[in-house]
Length: 398
Image (cartoon, rainbow, N blue to C red; front, side, top):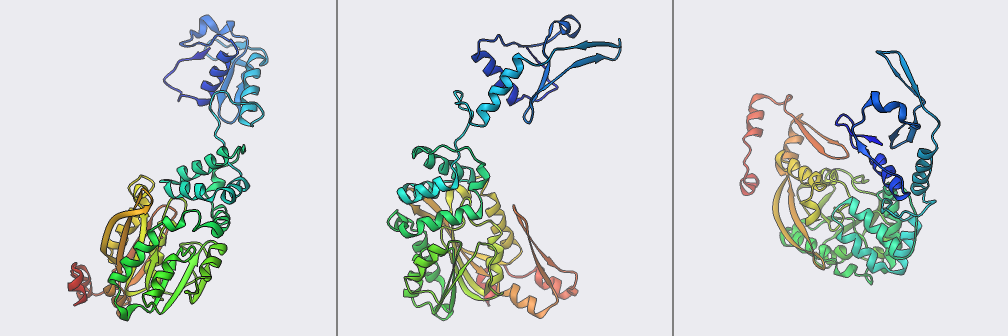
């Protein structure tokens, strides 16, 4: 018997125990209980909860009357508890669909070698980090692998690096050539980047170097590749287009401020990959007036999880750290679309910070990014100038 009450939140553990009881032929009731009339009839009493499953109750003291009701040790309820724990631990088969199979990292890596196209497709079509983890689970399950592990292990930087290390050798063959983000981002950048500004370009999340090959062929003088995977960078080196190759994880880069004339980032701002704080890092390493071209999978960008990217992009735009030049939804991988952006780093912001004691502080957090421009150190005329700066891109340049 489970007392029906509005004062306690619904318990998943309690529902599982009731399901197991019905499965074992035990009569299950969920109803109001008349304490005075029924309490003496209960032989076993326990409270259910996630951590303990069932906690035995030895006695209940009614304070008003001073009467104490005592109960026996758990026997029938203990059997239900032990069965539920066995199912949770994978020691007993789950007939109720409660458990989700999450692959161990080794199983994902094995799948990446045996069927890289399937792994790549599932990764690129995921629209959230949860869906990415579920896709990895299905990859292992379809391959006949069973393992119950922590889902969070599949979201980390180390797991992602190892997976891309395994995919590197077969990336193009597996369908990486159908990922058109590199081509779209590169052409978008080149269409707006004057020949005079094609000096030093950063390929962030370079992968196997598709974007780098296009940029080098268009006359970019110096290219730097930055990627999480060592093996992907080895493949990029084979193309012979990069002057510098750096391994690391966005948004943490080893580059100096105002180092690059332009940045291209294709396919890296996706579920389980680079975080929204990456945009602030782009602004930091970009020269005044430099261009940034990047893509974000459309479904992810428009989702609740993708709001961190929208907030970061718009916040940088509102404070004048960069200006939106171009935005368009185009193909990304087969039927999947991405939103392609082109932004210009603020000339006014960089120039004014050099001339005045204004402080630019970029504060990064896991879910958002706040940019604070301190106006307290500016005199009245400087404040008026900054507040009334022209919004039109051509006016700003003039």
